[in-house]
Image (cartoon, rainbow, N blue to C red):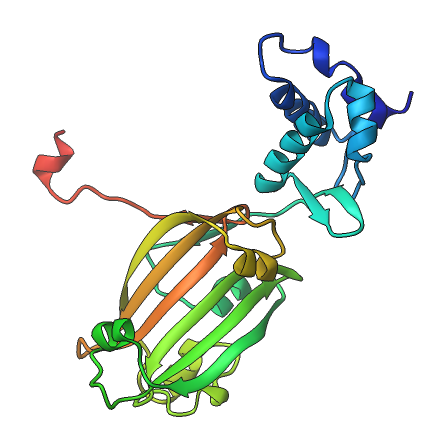
Length: 257
């Protein structure tokens, strides 16, 4: 019996009391951690796993779907199920206002973008309210898929008043560098972070399974004058990003708690 087949052979005997799909899921996870299964390895078919473990294909499918959502496995249409590439998590500070390009450059990562949209549009009600635009103003939208070391990490969808960015096609690798060249680089921002599950379209762009975990960030950035210059909604892969904030006590009274 091969090492891979042995992974599934004793699923019924392990962790008595746990549902069968949980036992199978743990057996595969443990095999990945031990290195019995390595990134890029193909799993046997559902039929073969079911036969090796003496369980139903429905149980196998449930375990595999859970592992795909956790990012342990990936499924490729027409090819099968594989151990996912090992992701090096990116840690980003929430205390500094920097661009994606600057963040990745500090880590020595090779960065590129795939443009999804660069155009000038009539603003949506949300853009009008957030950017402080009148109904007859125009908004520039810059959307792109952000890739580091050939791994898609984030989708950024930025809205900027056409007053500050009249030609979005002039945007280079860094939006902030483009705004700085026009004398309107933001100096502070407010960010809101929420957890979500990826829909099919965004999951496809980020090369993960629909329903995978993501971090959604809304950022509103301001000029020194206090005027809003940027409204960006970003979607980050939950398996690749950690956001870190340094917290300090604000008073002697707080320090005594």
